[in-house]
Length: 434
Image (cartoon, one colour):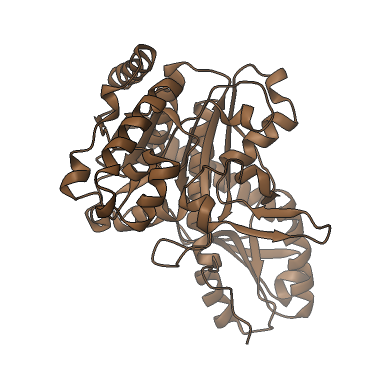
């Protein structure tokens, strides 16, 4: 028996409903904020993700799936969405058409890491990218979108953890200070951080091994080294969040895991006790050099990403159900081969008109067919036997009201549509009355 590769999983039909509902919710939220969907290749040129040899992020150093294709081109399966969208933005000269471009994506990503609960080698991400503006309001709007998504899923206690990495001058100043500080403590650093000390000392602040050590907690904070413009940008972001009544907490050690960030970086959390100490659902920040690094013009940008698996797990842990039982409009019970042929013809008419239909294809008895109608949560059940067929009639039962009638064989579609419209009108009337 051939089995799925390690670190992957099958999304079976009963699970797909949750994914579809989540993706629909994402698309509705993005519509409200005027973000347009983009779809980029699952694999890209190796250089899209491995641009800078100084990049010490685990994703770039250890986790990408890299291979040579048959044309001897080095290819990488995308480990995240931002770099591919930046490449598409430059290649298609989108900047020449839209001064400010707001995009979102949903799709699979790939990282070679140790599989564990909530962490797989193929996973799915939703993300947004706003390109072309350095306004702090763009940062705040993106954070507001992420907050709105979490709340729309019924999750409570949404909090924004936020920091600023400042501009290039800020980071250069701070880098020198960190090198000097952590050099004194390099014997106490983990092996990864000793390597980061030489290549990118800011990444030491993202360490999960050393984070509770005393010398780590006493490390200099970046806010002491912000330039005036960096400070003003960050204060404007916080002020916009305050105006939108979005709670936030400034976290001076927050740096995120990718090396292209500048200015605003943030993570979004929800109050989910079952998650333990790590309640992060998504995050992102501003990246103002990535577009130029990929050969485009100097372009400020802001992005955010969520893991869909983590969002689904969060909703389940909080008892929020995204999926509803499957149902159909009509189940046709046919008694005899000629009745089955006629039901097939009527089903096709109904389906073309937008009604979901099903019937038995195994030649089972009437009792088994009624059970199958119940299993499919059919709103209406149509029963066609030899006597009804001879008179061009059919019995139809509304399973919501238990009302059963005999109607013309060729009026099934109109009958069901009228009943559904009446039902919708009654519900609308009840709502209005309330």
